[in-house]
Image (cartoon, rainbow, N blue to C red; front, side):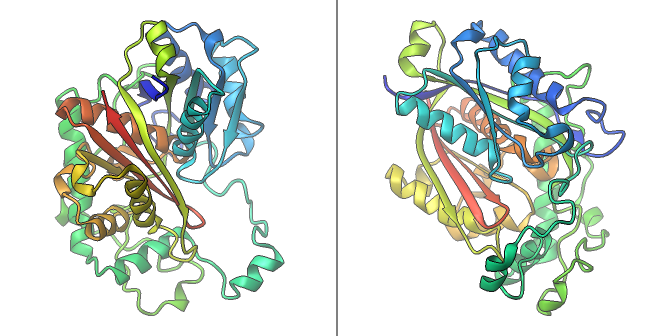
Length: 388
């Protein structure tokens, strides 16, 4: 009864993260406020009971500046006494928000807490926070004198080191679209998507995608600064086998199990184990393997005990190398499609994956599910949940 339980999880449908995208006309505060308001309303929860709201957002500048989670809480009509904070663990920001929320419940600090995330990549473009500034400093340059590289180069390096050929990357990416489209056609996303205006269908899913069509795309990163340092790269990563720029928001209602029972709410899952780790900041994206081993060890489980895994598809090499390293069942990996199809609204992706994972476990009557995300700067989060 001291468990940290997931009562509900919701998200917006994805919007293309560019001018003219389905959600580009919506202020990011309003996107997040929409899912926060829906989350409490559809569970009949009195908003004053919320002890805290912890949100993820990566580009915390311009319209997403000054603690956007607090602004969204007020915009959603929550009482003024409900606090909120915004954190940045890069792509895993809202997964980390869910960790902090659940850990606060387990510690007895919270009874009711919301973890959430938002990113409007159409209105606040990626890298807006830095604006060309020196983000390294003298001491970091002393440790890495040749400098670090953008994520696209890291993805290419991983493809080379794990011998992931272009054909495999494109086939995996096409499969992501097919699985997402099939889930949508079967109504599998209906329980999790909160309409924003009239938008209630993922705009980034392309049902007609084929590996042959993706093979025609040119590599995306040959001109990236620092690429000349790595002659072994033969350029396999394209816009088609990477996640698209995306707008979106998502949220999870997390409680102490006793509180959920007292309020008459049925928990859908509980948090079982947590893991977070740093990794080589040059390769940057392979930390999902170490984080998964860490969380499995803490849980006392093996990969075979898991019924579903959500590994963020920032770039196709990431879930593929994870699958090979863990000898994981490809049928259980991103069974509803991943970020290549469903989009990657940076700060919102963590609780979006959690939303997908909970619903997949329920649909298949699975027991354990794992979520893992690579993160900028060489980090990764992993979470194991257990369906009730």
